[in-house]
Image (cartoon, rainbow, N blue to C red; front, side, top):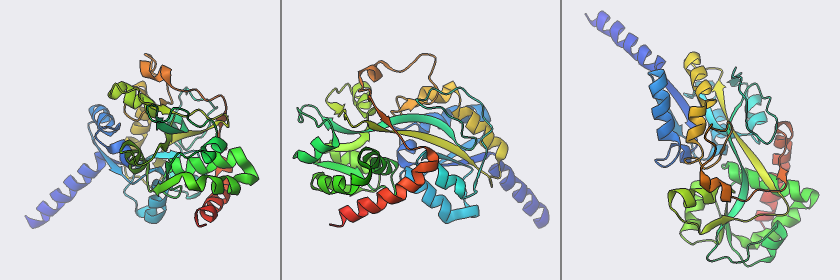
Length: 325
């Protein structure tokens, strides 16, 4: 009887594992107000499985976690890397092709066979328009102002990394001086986006590094029109967030089903009013009305994925050198 009980228990454990998909993502995605709860409910209704969403700090922390865990990782899918990290992620050899064919609504052409886009947006500095009447219109104006800002650490946060590459795109070889000029404005550097945005809302800084779409949350969810994004004549750096399947997943069919779900209109419907970004696939009903009030950058800045890694290393060294002074 002991042998039969052991065999039965092992079978049930295996079956339970086969019906569970583990997705590593960032903390704000799995929060009560993020996309996680709606994504979990919708996908579980389709798959008859359990979707285990695991928050792993901010976006850039995902890649560090995967490198640390290696082939021992529990992740079947990773959701929350961006094009600044995809080349480094693919270089690990840990990802498999997504196999999804879809028509994307992105500002750039998409042909990556490994990573699947699910949303996009532009980085921006968000401010309270009842307190800041003359927002800066460039990095130079920000540096010359007496406004305080809170930013995120580029080593753990995708917005923080986006800011590094934004400054690098605008200033090129003059980026070290630009950081030196901005240092007086920086109140603190947080590990992730949630902490930084919370500090801003609590009045600990005049502006916070976030997205052009962030004011839509306040307008739609809170009926609060006091938050705006500063439009920079320099241009705004673009972020495209992606999902990828781990090559070592024990549930490849379930992982494929999830990626197909990510590329569906049902998933796209969830994104605008939970992740507060533009969906990579436009829903048939379009975007919520509040999105029409957002600033539209005249110049979109971005490094191609194959150039972002080299640019990142240089930009990080420049930022660290300036921050240490």
